[in-house]
Length: 221
View: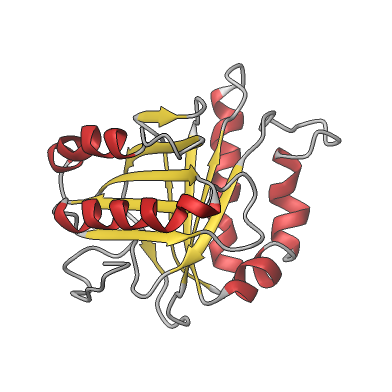
């Protein structure tokens, strides 16, 4: 699947209008899945609104990129971070259905050895196996970035907000294994810049393909 994700900063007075504009755009974009929602408290550099569009082909995604850019040129929008990327999600059966979508945009130091990057990616991939509140996840390398030269997009679907703020962020696999890559006090850290950690409620899964679930709504499909 081919995705476009944008994290959008916009003042509260204009948030509803911008959200409505983005929702109308998403509904007409032909996406297999889409999500337009306010970000939840606890997001870090995650914007006020989250836009996620997911397509079957790169051509479909790229065809709406200019429309998205035009919508986000709205004078009320003060900052945008995001990425365009492709990948296939890993779906974890037998777990609670996700109600929260989370994305992490990060930038690994460009001088990092490829073998070290591979170990970092492997550690990220180990997380969902230990955290039972994750029902789907995907790790991707961006083809196009906005706001920074992001090197990775790490997405998950969580059972609920407690599933991310508690079971995920406080799990030993997170703070004992993964955090070392992000913590400047650890000698092997490689993520030297701020990250964008953003999450929001979703009515229907967004990492699943259109064939795996045919649900639809005004806010998420």
